[in-house]
Image 1: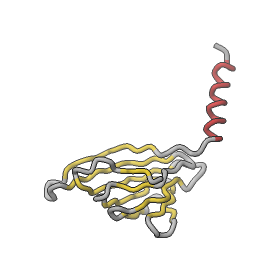
Image 2: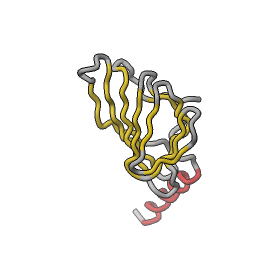
Image 3: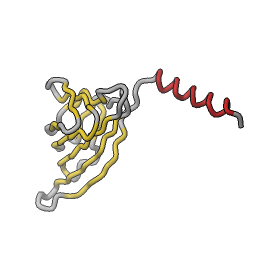
Image 4: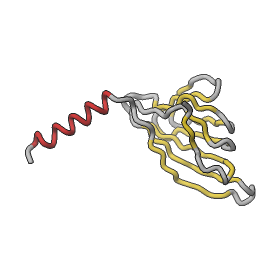
Length: 134
């Protein structure tokens, strides 16, 4: 195997990734439990990681979900319902009411990654945390 065999496919993949729209976020569930003193309710925490320039499509969350979002690193641009579009930096947070439309959710930087923690309090019977909006 020569060096061209290794480099050319890598260059092609890099060029394709630069030409295509930013990919969606990476979501990792890091906690899930029923809330023992509130029958029928659960708490789920997920980490959402955005590569530089990455974004989520417009979406809603489970209809019963109250969400607390905390930026762990980087900066996240967000718009919920008819609120202002705002950039939240590491250490800042916001909440989303049940049934909210999250029309903008993206990394505010084209060069640095960003990560947030989203904590959901929702009906235990709700299975889909996020539903894209067309």
